[in-house]
Length: 235
Image 1 (cartoon, rainbow, N blue to C red):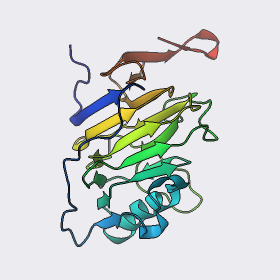
Image 2 (image 1 turned 120 degrees about the horizontal axis):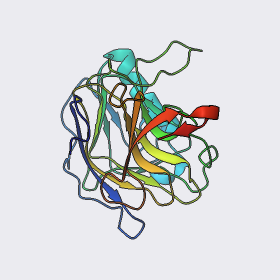
Image 3 (image 1 turned 60 degrees about the vertical axis):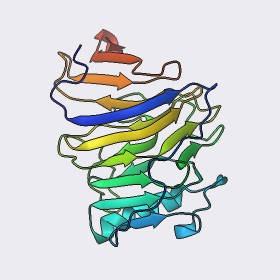
Image 4 (image 1 turned 120 degrees about the vertical axis):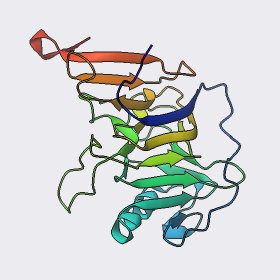
């Protein structure tokens, strides 16, 4: 069965149930030497990486710094647990690569405000991290990644959704070629999904939704959505 025709992306992920441990062996034990990369570790840009303090601003600042300096490039994320309280936006051409003895983890804390309900349309979900297009000017809206989004990616970084976040989706992944998710583990708990991919023109109704949910260890749903009579979504 061809799940994703005509799209060249790599997805090497593991969706964990609540019974599985979150601590995972890292494939990069040390940070690579890259003078142009931004390093996000304990103490850098205000990051605590202790699983308690809110590190959302530090993570976004690291991503923004790459965009401001080299436009495209790498953020190295050191070992630790980075709690987030809002959606992180990964601009086009920027890659997050974790390192350390154990993989770093992005954690959505229990009962985080804004993650209890939502997701009316594709691209408007309650995401921990969203692959986005180019960074917008101040005051302009964030644009979802699209067919012009290349070279964005995440590697060697895990995601964990704690209890009380039923609308939470770990990663919004709508990209073009040469983008990737690899060496990752998702602990979804009672969240909505591990990752969400969608692509125009891959089904007769215009959108295709691909989601891995909390009950599976592989892709759990592939749905084609359309606008049904009366304004409701149908399959």
